[in-house]
Amino acid sequence: MSADFIQLLVGGILLGGIYGLAAFGLSITFGVLNVLNLAHGEFLMLGSLLSYGVFVGLGMNPFIAAILVIPVFMLLGVGFYLLLLKPIADKPPHQLLVASILVTLGASLFIEDITAYFWERPVTGISYSLPPMELGDVVISSTRLLILLFIFALACAMQLYLKKTFVGKSIRAIVQGREGAKVVGIPISRVSALAFSIGMALAASAGAFYVTLFTVTPVMGIPLTIKYLCVVVLGGLGSIVGSVFGGLILGVAETLTAYYCGAEWAPTIAFILLILILIVRPEGLFGAKK
Amino acid sequence: MTRSGKRLLYAVVVLLWAILTALPWLGFSYTVVWIFLLAVYFTLALSYDIVGGYMGYMNLGHSTFFGLGAYITAILLNHGFNLFASLLAALLLVALFAALISYPLFRLRGAYFALATFGLISLIEVLTVNLRDLTGGSGGISTPPGNHMLPSYYMVLGVAGATMVMSHLVARSKFGLALFSIREDEEVARAFGVPTSLYKGLALVISSTPASLVGGIYVWNMTYVSPESVFGLEIALSPIIMAMLGGTGIMIGPLVGAVFITLVQEFLWTQVPYFHLAMYGVVLALLGLFMPGGLVRTRWFRPLIQWLGLGEAVDYFKNVDAERMS
Image (cartoon, rainbow over all chains, first blue to last red; front, side, top):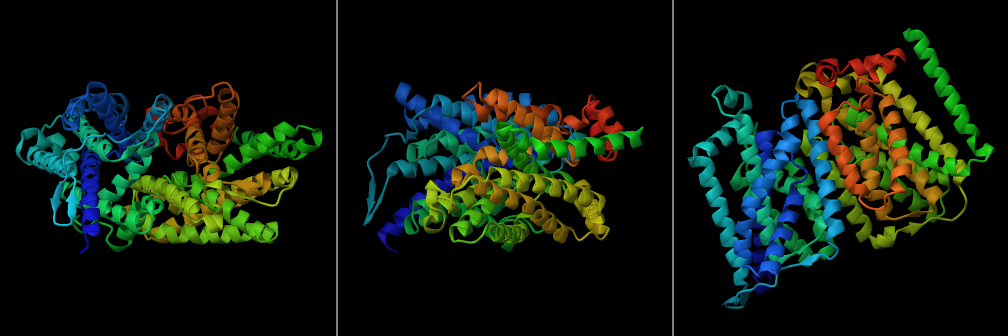
């Protein structure tokens, strides 16, 4: 393996970690609320912009910024839930589907247009770097490694939270069966609000990492949401391990495509992967066969 | 009551058709352009409704068919084919595309299907931008110039009318009933012997046809096509908003929605240069929050619709919609 290839692999894995983190946020909101949040990508974008603002405005370390955006976006998430999703939560399935698509797509367009109006120039990455590491021929940016470590820690913390704490368990209970969870006395609405805000915070913190490496534009939200869909379908719904692996596959595939076929083909790979997996294994790589 | 209502409805339709046909000869050239666009959007909304309304699968990527139809027609026109051959080829190729894409996409359901079809638009857009030799890249392609306003006006009216007839026939047929049953409960439908996979694919093919045709006519009239103009958000979302605003799963819904939205565009868009997308967003969100059944199922419209003898389709939703609407 050439040094180039390993470099690409590292870049792809990092991108994949970011995708996986955000996609898990999407999958947890879908599991709990039964609503696919089409505005999810917009929150990664907003998280990026906010942490960029914190970095430029206050000169703060991007890692601290990534932690700072979490409570802000949790609050935003609760607001979003109460305003837009709670009113439709109790509709019958087909109605809920139509209403949720309309509401979240509407919110997504709204956020995109307003942000694009106020944000003329695309944000081109945070100029923050640590001295690179050299392993033989391979030069690895230690910023990237640190981010990867950070994402890994966040994913582990998330996993522990869902497995060990009472609230985490009640979130999983709702994912497994809404009616049953209601019967044993789990306050669906409150836990839904919490799950939604967690999902949003995950997207936003993924955004804070995204901006340290890639260009952020106001119109990237919807394409990103489609990538998350690909990740979620790849990994199987509702599992954090699946999301992370799905993210890694997409990240590596995108990076390799951009390198070998040209950057203009990279946006197509998510959709092609999605189609492939739907034909070959519709339940996802890690999903259980029904 | 209902009978006189129905008679009135037919009378109105015939009168409307007569007015629309006569319009170019009365010298309303601006109105003709306006009606042309209205008819394009209306056809898209109506054909979307076959999958989105009757079958209950929200196909957010319906404009893919429109754009592909436009591109295929433009490319063939530039290679010296005549209009009808180009349109026919566009129709057939897009139908084939719909049939192929239906296999993987219909393995998704609900919101996943909606998002994946939405992604389809950007996939095809990226392809048209990247395959420069064939499609002219992001610059788009021009077709042989000429003033085709009048013939294309009549052609679009014809396609719109044909789509209405087709939609009506589908709704009345056994096939249409099968689509409704898929919307209500796909598992039960399959258990009762509805070949769901086949019918879902067929519905997508049927709904793609009018879209590809108006796409072709549109590009013939405009003599120019670019990825932006046919794969943009505006053309993707307008028909769906029209169908949703008017009311899905009932033919008069897209008509009400199309007239309403184009009127709003006419008066609002020209006044306010910014935030068109944001306004679409707000309209969508409000629709989702307050009337996912659409205008025709609201308290104010309901008596009128019933009097016109179209109550059936409205009442079809009764157990789902009515309690929440009134």
